[in-house]
Figure: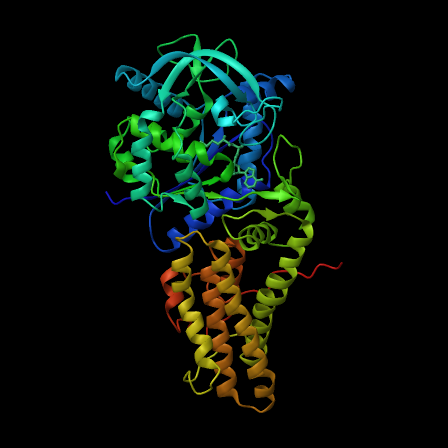
Length: 526
Ligand code: ME8
């Protein structure tokens, strides 16, 4: 069976509602999934929720609910946000589902039976918001200073726990070698370098993969140790293989695994770039069975502070879409566009409503919306609402560069999207749109109409319609509803949108009537 392109997001904790950060990772993954589907490839896009652990147990207790009732409620907020944002995931896994918990237990038993786990006592630090253990060495403790989490900088708790351990250090040489021979395993380069330099120092001897049940009861039972539950990270990471059928469905697993693109934020880089490959290696997976790429993007911040649930400075995507952008018929797409265009993927970004408003009014309303509106109005007026017949391209000096840029756009995106350069890809689309608007100014179709030069007028309008067609295809992964509307306004509702057609010119049929028109991005009165 042909390999299916497999894309994952982190499984988000359901201790609180989703925020902009969660939507960022998921929208980016969705964009890549849509791009591969448009290219005619089979895609499996997995997202879901991380439902066990101390943090969720505490959040449930604080709300006076049992963990199970609590997670059932919060998970709905994630599911409805993904619907609002047109997320096209193929599956949604919850770590409380038996299809996942059973695989986690089988993995624990396998590791135990193969003698790969150790039983020991652990003393160190624990950060509940990050659900992460830290050793004294990792935190580089200095006398007289407060001990804080090496990841989020918040307070940590001293813990002493008996448990089961997965050796880390004995896999360190293997991981260092794997990284050296797989330079694109961790992206972007800054994150690769971070992990490569981390691996220059000795890793902690072991990773604790259980928690004592009397401290944390909300977790997957460890089959051979009734007084323990599974450490939430060991549990959650395994979702990436449990859903594809690891140890339960070999054929399905072969068709999906390894994951082609695993999206994460840089806060969970160490878990994914060190613990995750070591867990897979300990389970006996080969180098060829390691994930192809783990991409750790940057953080959305407000001022200098990372936006996060536990800091309470969250931006709620539903409020942005339904309230701030309430006048926009394609509000979710405006939000998606903003996330992917504003910040180069991998870098941190600063969130503000002003920044969204600016992108909306410049790139979307003034440039894209205007191009579609002006072109289709002129086709209505000068070509009876039907796609015009183009004369030979090349008779005017301005035709060729516009046609060439439009026909070459998909190729540019074919370089940028697999490299996860979403903002670069959108910049290229915007460049074409600006070019087309300039072309309208320089060809002045209204002048051609006055001069009754209908051959040239129709060529110009046909050129512009082709540009809009190509823009609709290439924008589909980013703004699926806007792309659909552009497509329908061109009268193409019965024609499938396919990536390969973006490199073809011309493809529109002269005489075909336009669809119903509407304004894509209404101007917001300030
Ligand atoms: O870490 N900017 O879940 P989580 C950008 N359950 N992205 C952000 C962000 C921000 N300010 N804040 C969060 C967990 N994210 C674990 C994952 S995976 C097996 C287990 C995004 O709910 C980003 O993708 O804390 C980050 O890695 C993730 O949300 C953390 O989500």
